[in-house]
Image (cartoon, rainbow, N blue to C red):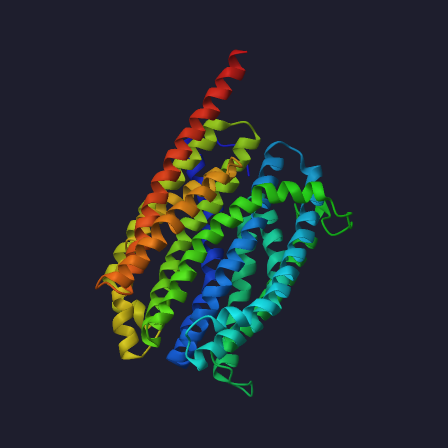
Amino acid sequence: MKQTFTTSQKIRQMLVILLPILITQIALFSMSFFDTTMSGHASPVDLAGVAIGVSIWTPINTGVTGILLAVTPIIAQLLGSKRKEQIPEKIVQAIYLGVIIAISIIIIGIFTLGPILNLMSLDPDVHDIAHRFLVAISIGIVPLFIYTVLRCFIDAHGYTRITMFITLMTLPINIILNYLLIFGKFGFPKLGGVGSGYASAVTYWIILLITVFFIWRKQPFAELRIFSRLYRISLRAWKEILKIGVPIGFAIFFETAVFATVTLLMSQFNTTTIAAHQAANNFASFLYMVPMSISMGLTILVGYEVGAKRLKDAKIYSYLGICLAIFLSLLCAIGLLVFTKEIAGFYTTDAAVLALAQQFLIYALFFQLSDAIAAPIQGALRGYKDVNSSLIMAFVSYWIISLPLGYYLANYTDLQAFGYWIGLNSGLAAGAIFLLIRLITLQRKHERMNADRASS
């Protein structure tokens, strides 16, 4: 990370940080992508079971790990303000917090997983696969949360290529494990969709070990000696992380939970509809990696500039990121429109699921523009350590607008399952408008404060 002076320098630095994040996010998501697609080729029942399991796991995973994303702006601002000596304790305290949260999730899951699944009207085979999938993936929760902290630490330095390299190293391992455990190849047990849960859990352990090795051996991380000292638990440090991280986590949870809730509500329809919805939803989430990656990059860039008191540069980065996201989203939408049938074919060979998935994918087109505006703005706001506005936006747009509207359209009109997708699109659009207004207001506030300090 370094100071930039021209727009071209900013674009270059943004791309240097952004592209590895994008590749990393695509690689991480590809684990879920291959879990879903390979399970779908095992059988529609396996696809539906994994879909239910993923719909429960995803909001928990993304929401709780979202709390740990507070590490990125905290470390970025420390680097921008030249206070590197404070970093080691911040990271160790975040690891402590991550482990405590992960163990808590496992304990809560032991008592609640069965009752949650029992509340759903699932085919017995789908119920069984979903339950065993979640038990399998729980083996990797602790290493996943620790890795999240360490990844934020690396990325905040601007060395996003390192996390890209680590993730790309582990992706083939995940695919191979999926192949062995889902289909029972080379003497391994044939577990179907459940095998993808075990494959992901093992992969999480491997990716953590590789990350620890890089931080221990490679500069500039090695000089900070993150693992050389065990600090006492500091509730003050935890409070700082939670103050920023809890709103981030809940905002992400509200977003992913509404998509998961829609998937659960789809259980009122048949297995074909559940499988087709999950296929389209999975690919829409795959495309979301583009604006999400830009969002993560902007948190680093904006946080660094805000820490250095260069507010004008922070503002320029914000709008460069939004423009780039809109441009790329339009390209993705065109590709989705042209190759709808081929994309649906990635997930299933079942004719009924294939036909219905293509219809759901058309609705996914409209996700692109709203996500291209909302996600980068969320990243920029986190760089300013402004996190409560995203939390409010997520709750209102998804749970006050999206879900009630979708439920009404799905149950009281002829749209049926498609009504939920229309509701989601409406909430996304409303959220994007709200966040844009918030970003403009916040930047003007900072400009006035900066002007007042200069005049005094």
